[in-house]
Length: 451
Ligand code: FAD
Image (tube, rainbow, N blue to C red; front, side, top):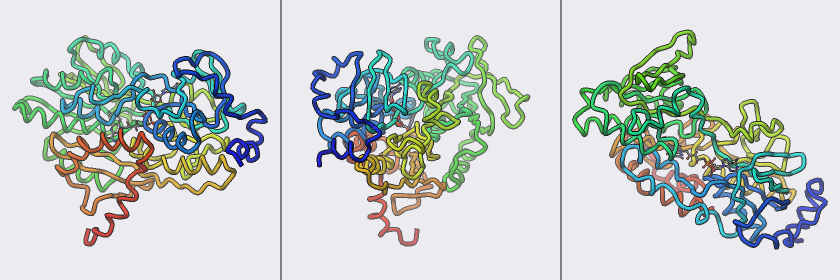
């Protein structure tokens, strides 16, 4: 029985139309895809970390042209490198490849933005009017950076050689190292917003890198290093939080919990923060350098489709199977999913085999057996030569790969983050070969005696 027969038999409600490869014969070149109607077995919206990994797995299983990817960007960024770029350890051009060279050859790329999701009719349409009908949909649109939600921020970020920077966007990341070099004294303030964040460790990684940089350049004694975080804790997993508090104390970093950035006045180099436990209380703080992590949300285009998302705007999936709670032919991977894991590329990698096997099972009308345990990892870089590799699951229980305690700063973990992980990402994850470290963890467990 062919794949198409299987689909028609098992998912009759989805199509009733001719699903055949002839549909794809019109697609001569990627760029030539224009405003029209298209059909496919699997539609992936978003070609970032999760979307690209699944595009590789699914297209290799389903064959040429049966998977379409909607992705508007020319470049695919390895975002975890932005932290190191902020510290001057890597350059921006190290962090990206052309999307055309990263998306698998067997997929059809629609280079456009998805603007409308219509799960009742199994259709997604794009900004230029192309309407794509699917049997299975995978949503992988990541998080939207809302720099404009903080008055004064976009203006401050547009001042040439200014004092405000952000590692979260390729547009602003280079300003960070500039700020580290420029500041000579006064307050270096680092923020964490009151919203879900991708890589919740990154806002403090750049804090530690900056503090180390100031020491290296012998200007630390003139600079107050301040971390204003909206969170009530330094890190969600106690095992690592305890270690981080020790570092903060030892390095004389001032931490203000539940303090949220609400406005910037670039003309006076001041930032206004709110006490989230007592919102009528605000603090005006002068900065000589301000590193801002913007508020983030699900994409507006996705969040407006109320049938697909939960109240917070994230794709409403079962946290074990990553299948949509209502639309059984819809799955999500990565930062856009409602699964309550820490939003990281490492989490998307661990989700990828689960989503892949469950999508294939759903296509074949079989029960879903893949279960995601909430694994996420965060290499907490604490300077120019050390890192704590945090790994944990849905219950915030450490799920460590290596046989030694990982709540300690280590040079080996730093080298792994800086030099090994980019290769793992480009050569393994995006090609569909990396499923997270579960296998390695099992193998390493034989060495864990006495841990
Ligand atoms: P993304 O990789 O963000 O991809 C989303 C894709 O959707 C993008 O290609 C985008 O162009 C596309 N898209 C957007 N809008 C549309 C639309 N309308 N239609 C179609 N496509 C659209 N993770 C780690 O594991 N370890 C780390 O150390 C780490 N450090 C980080 C440091 C920083 C500064 C940042 C910013 C992130 C870091 N991350 C880290 C997080 C990691 O990069 C993300 O969690 C990961 O990229 C999520 O993958 P994703 O596929 O969900 O989203």
